[in-house]
Length: 465
Figure (spheres, rainbow, N blue to C red):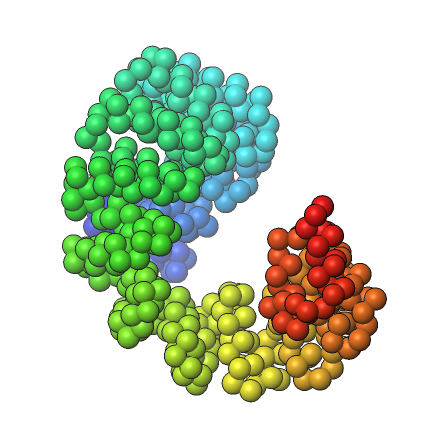
């Protein structure tokens, strides 16, 4: 919904007239209320400079009307000019020393400047002069939420509950704060309390499902979504989330049915098509998966996930040219996506385009020297091209960025191949000490080492430890 949807035609007409006045460099008459509505229009459109222009013009026409100054302070705050906002508010306070909205706005700007004690004092004044104490407590709590200070927000919501123990909105907000803090267990407890008060609360069941999903408790999340859907079978967010959690549990057949239900009831959606296609691909229903990925791109040609998904399937079906084209399209849409870049490099390599694969991997390493997979893949290509010494040097360079066990396992393989047994055993022992559980990797890369007595002896020593 656009901000315009909240405005009447008169406001839009007045805004157009104001803009024409500015273009013509003329001076038209507007009443104060009209100028306030125009400034609100620009604020809702996030056109803050235009809003200020209106407010300055309002002050010029009505120098004794304090409302423009308060609105100007609000705009300065939205622009991140907190000190400018406070300067305006200090002047306003001389004329309106009991205005709760002024103190609320002042507290918000002080908070953004991390003047916490002064902000608290200003909020206390806002509460003192407020017509409705509960409403003001909510407003202050929301300010703390906006400043990512959920702990303080919770204090104000709890203050509301002292006066109104049955205020469900305050409880929902407390749960949301816990969620934002990553304290999902506490959020779940609050949602459970809300459900005990109202077992037929669809939002409470849905929210419980969301935090259970975040905790990785997908079984309980699905149960919560099922209760939500039992109350309102057309509550599609619950159905969509349930399908995604079924995927997490690798219950792909059930997930497919759920995604199809979402499409049937809620209409076609590119993301839903992508998720459905991914399930079908995991069930080896590749043709159907491609069909749904194509439906996703028909709805939204710029959805990289769908192009990448098709690339994965074409790659699996050894349709190299198709795979390459789709990976390239995905990466073109999301050039920062490292997964897409790695897949394209791998496809280029397997298509015999070693130079292109090297270019992609070197670019990834330049952008992110901590990208382990890119270093390993590039070293492998160099090794396959016959320059194992250069591959070893590359991994030694990688180790200057991160001391990762995978580099040591791979170094050991390369060094065994060129006869550097002493160095190879040293790097193998280093890798085993760092991560013994992954020692099978050396056999995956160099199967012949399964019969190497020195390798088996080293693994035996670390296994016994």
